[in-house]
Image (cartoon, rainbow, N blue to C red; front, side, top):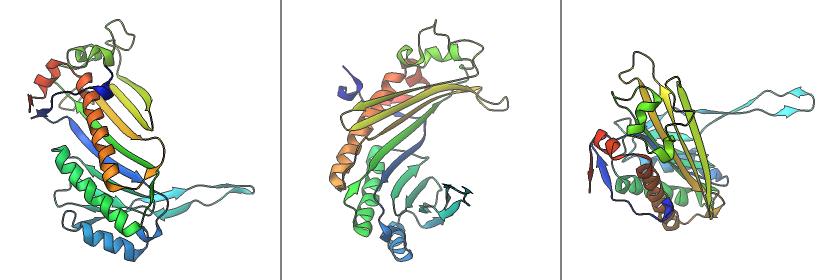
Amino acid sequence: MTFDQETHQRIVFARNPLKVVVAQVQIPPAYSLGDPAGLAAAQASLSARYPTSLPRTQQVTVVAGPGGPVPPVVQPGPARFGDESGTWVVSVGPDSASLETTRYDSWVDFRARMQELLEIVATQGHVARVDRLGIRYVDELVSEHAVRVPDWQQYIAASLLGEAEAPWIDERVTRSFHQVSMSIGDDGVNLRHGYVMNPEESQYRSTYVIDTDIFTAQPVPFDVEGLLERADRYHRWAWNLFRRSITPAAIELLEGAEV
């Protein structure tokens, strides 16, 4: 049975390996989400959860003209708002909106925040289509017992890490990353995973990263309930992929308990 057809028991980890979770929608330009009045309305709607205005990043566009280099065009990126703890950030712009956290507690909470953001985009932007909906989970595993790549064989499934004879499972490896891309109907999956040695002054000498990005591979209608149903599926797939990727020893390492 493939991962998208499986159902795995939910596990809560006392040592949560999730470092960042991001949901993003990309949309055709909705200029009302770029002008001051539209952004002010979006900010007012978001202020209960995200009262802090954050600096806007700069978007640089470089165009090569027939007569030689053209000065780059610098424009402000999406407006960004954060919560008081500094662990949740939302951004809203004329062609995208995103929700990001470094303190993920549950899908129920994340989904509710995602619904709120989608409804604001729908109301303020009058958007009819989503060009891309994506959800990304970045997990980082560390252990005092895992220094070199072979040490991770106790925690990472052989189907992901590789068999003991694989050339990238070698004491001399300092960094190793792999990517698998899949197409499932109108959805896409990118699974990146790998090992990296940390600086000597770090608490843990190495880290194993499992980075899962699941997204629409073609435009879909901007229907909030439909987008949330799709997000539920992506969440389930991401969990199945992560659960397949780790061993019982990793669950013990992360102090996991079934719920």
